[in-house]
Length: 558
Image (cartoon, rainbow, N blue to C red; front, side, top):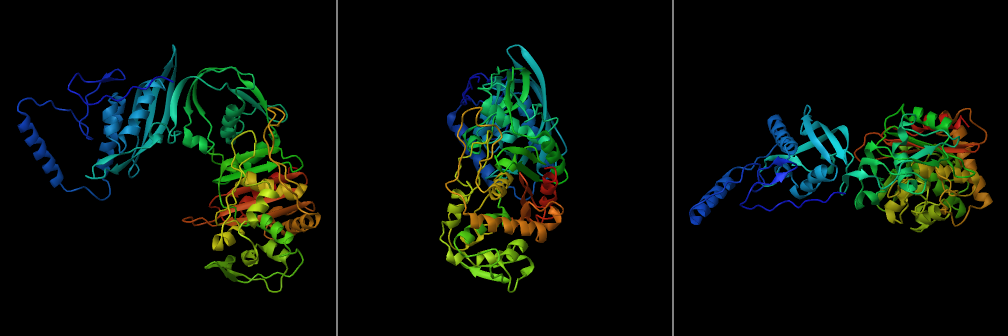
């Protein structure tokens, strides 16, 4: 990385030269020239005091920004940035210190030259713009073009329009603490292969961009490749805490890639890509229950790997784990009578079933198949606060943050809760958080009878240790749990999606309510033969109708 220059303090000397352009030093937070007053100091103080009083007397601007204010603020910022007047550009934001650091890094660390910034048509207070420039490093140059956006807000104190500072203004892939750097990549590139030896590219599989980034970060230095020169996003501590990988934006000179073989099935991966493309905000994962091998992963949105790193309430698919707990404790049995009232109160909350249905004189199997919430909530008084957490960790290998898949993942979270939140966690709400990888693993554990940590790259490649579960379910509990899922696939809420896939199958649907979202997230987890899969469609509606067809289509390929 190049050395960052400290922003010069205001002084009565020559104007500063920034990025090869003569820059006028800014006084205060407004954009304008700093006037050098000579003569009597007292007079200058009087003028300053009078000016301050005049400014204070002005009414603070409030209310929605006008189109003129938005356009003027955006153009002022972009013009100063383009002309290399970085202190003025930074002062036109609500965080001049952070803006100065990234704007300076844009020139000194990213080595972007001759940049132009062309604003597009504003949409309210948001202004898109196009960046065009040249990245030059050690005699090698390449053109760079991308789009970004800024938002105009009123400045605290006087209400003047300014740019709200966000790292994404400089580049849409930047998050807090991240930087843009051009140079020899610290990590050599990798050539990822599917299980049949075919090369994995984003041209073939658009969903796998984040997966390829993760493979490079994990295996680039041990796969035998040689680094090239590139412009990339280098993640800061906050992004790394979220398990975000560094990202290559532009390759100036090619490195020599090393080779990494994955467990992905080209046939299933292609089908998964096609399936999620039919829905907005859809994600799916397919596993082999007998080994834990990940056979496919796909997301309809390509900027974030929700399938592996999402943190979402799983809704009623969580009832698979809860059922195993209730059966083990003797609180439920597949064919035993079990209450399913319209509502149930616990911890000050009143819990409802969908449309307030009830099942009179029904069995636990009937409640599971129809996804009766109160059948599970009614057992909360019989449970300790930590029971569900221990079951998820000890039997299903979740919520311990110790999976080593080969790329970044979120391994599920089932926190210890009390009162109403504990009850809500029994039906996959409250503080419980999962993603399709986690829920596919749950189905795989039921199918195989033992937890196999999912993995994308064989542990033989780097001799890493895969996570294990502390114990397995008893044969009786496992048999009942499989019966619950089989019955749901045949006669319950999953029957339509799973039609024709039996008899060696099982499924569970889920719908997770999200505050401020009109439709719930639709979940579906299932197994058939030696395939297990799970999917989610965010804001899609009931899982059997949204995620169900995606998962079932992939299971049919088994």
